[in-house]
Amino acid sequence: MKKHTIAADVVLYNHNIKVLLISVLQNSHRNLSVLSLYSTLRGAGVETKLLFLPKENEYRGDLVKEFVRSNKFNLVGVSLMTDGFYFARQITQDIKEEVPESLVIWGGIHPTLKPEECLQYADCVGIGEGEKTLLSLVARLSESKDYSDLPGIGTESPEGDFIVNSPPPLITEFDTLPFVTYDWSSFFVQNARGLLPFDHAEYCNYSNYGGEDYTVMASRSCPFNCSYCCNSFLNALYNSRGRTRKRSVDNVISELRHAINTIGTIKFINFMDELFLTSRKWIEEFVRKYSDQIGLPFIVQLTPGTFDNQIIRKLKGAGLKFVVVGIQSGSERINKMIFHRNFNRNTIIECSRILNKNGIYPYYDMIIQNEFEEDSDRDKTVRLLLDLEKPFSLTFYALTPFPRTELEKIYKEKNVRPRIDPYGKSYRDCDQEDFYFQLCSIIPYTSKYVAEYFLRYKKNSFLRFVLKLYFTLTNNRTNRRKTAQEMESP
Image (cartoon, rainbow, N blue to C red; front, side, top):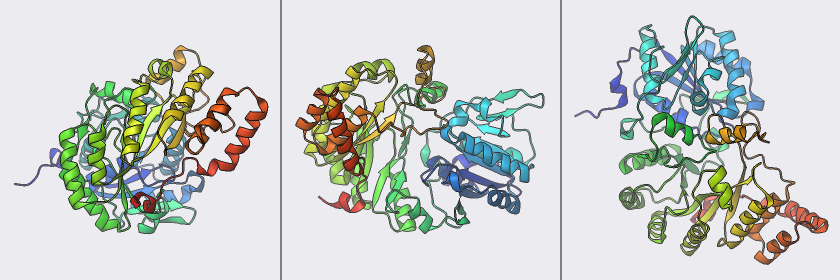
């Protein structure tokens, strides 16, 4: 019996439809959303190409306009987050100027959060998960039918009113989706050298690890509702709080085997799931099959309190080398009142001991700067970091009120102006002149006694100068990514 896929839910007459998908994710090819859309369309027989624009400062509108015109794309989809809004606007204006008959649809998290804003520039927007929506849109366009009533579509009526439809139900059977593939014959990139085929060399060029990594997601959704995360909006949109959807282990393994055979240089796997540990039964099967069929070192994202020594030991046996763990703040007040996160200091410290005991290297995510903290809150963050088991690294973020999140509401309610503009500055744009940023940065490779001394005498101007000098001299050690060779070492 032929396996059912979501493409079977719509009848496609696509001989006259050509689609271009554009990724504006900067400095990376890891746009898993647009890659999934590409694989879904190609799996349904839709003629599709994918264009990466990973360097906004190298963007050339003339090349993109000619690419769209010469290929006669009927539908152009741009995938964007909030910080890509202005770039997407420029690209869309260029395309509509050259090929006004092409339909431009924006998709991704920002059009889902702010559809009306995006409809001021795009012909239509995709809301929520896009695979079913995009297939249905192509089917309607193939028959020259109206698409304004499609679930997951936002558009403008002839009268100038915005029509924003609810998204289709969440996809629960992920094995019905074609898994991500890198199709060198249909991938392109526009950079300083021109508009070129995106081949294996470009894959390596836009990888954090020189092409040795492969990024994959085994699940979607997140059971938590952190105020600063768009999941707080998505969970409400889909009424899906607490629900995480998982691909089958066999499906994930199949994608990894295909990627290893296709790309050839992969030495470790990066799982980008919001929360990797959601089902012990799934983990048991994953550990067994991954060890037997893949066997490469891998990375996962974890949350304090969701794992124990037994689980970490099993994952290590399968190849787990390091983890990303979200701590965010050492202040219970900030975690609960501002971030809407559970916080237990002892649990976090115990998690660090479990990881250390098993030889798993952690990267701890910290929101080091936000407008709601007092020095007493930041002192608690420093003291928590001092009590974590070494070695570890820290990744720092500045608090950013993305649209439609609970955090944006908090800023408005408290009449606080954020330092970080989600449309402009990156949430990684921390103030490196800040005393606490500098102090936290040196903790991973500085003795506890020295760091405590800086904290105790933080008002001493001379010691602040010494800290700044020490931080400047050693800053290249902060947040350094481990190489594949280091990951494979004991």
